[in-house]
Length: 208
Image 1 (cartoon, rainbow, N blue to C red):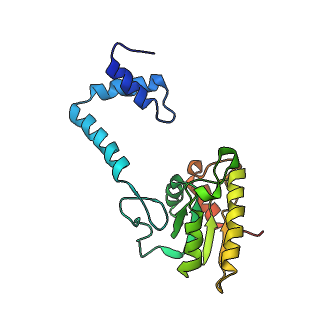
Image 2 (cartoon, rainbow, N blue to C red):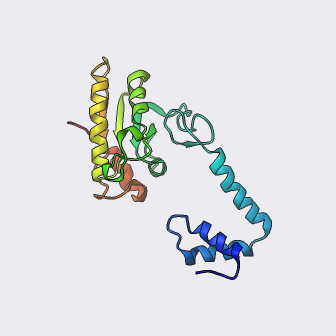
Image 3 (cartoon, rainbow, N blue to C red):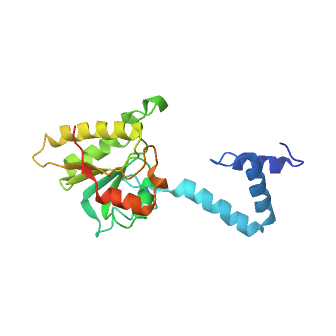
């Protein structure tokens, strides 16, 4: 689907790269932007440019941040002895929306998935082990993964690693997982706040 304008075609092609945006939707969005005043479009583009070029990832938990240490890790009211391990930044947002969790997080940046070529070495697993082994403050690690083969594999792998780390120290760490109020195969970001909150509250100990 080509138009009479090369510039419009380029705009459509750019918008079409966004997930869930087909060419017809991209065309509507491009024409909408064209109908706006130049200042509005400039502000829109500037916001995206600054977001891409200046967004940081927290040095402690790897969550998205505007500073080296995110607002959650730097909040003195958060319980640093409880670390909720998630696969994705969107999972942090989903859990925060429940308003029921007051610990801190650790974002892996994905889940172990041999089918997709994602190995443990590509995830932020070693920094998590360092937090538990060297921090001397972590008392519980919560796995908040989707009920999928990838989530189960990741939980099993990290549990074995954590057990080997904690066996080397005198301090034991409780390893738990959120209750299976989340449907099999569902992603955390699509779960309603009440179900996700109850899953956190009713978490169970992980045993291998």
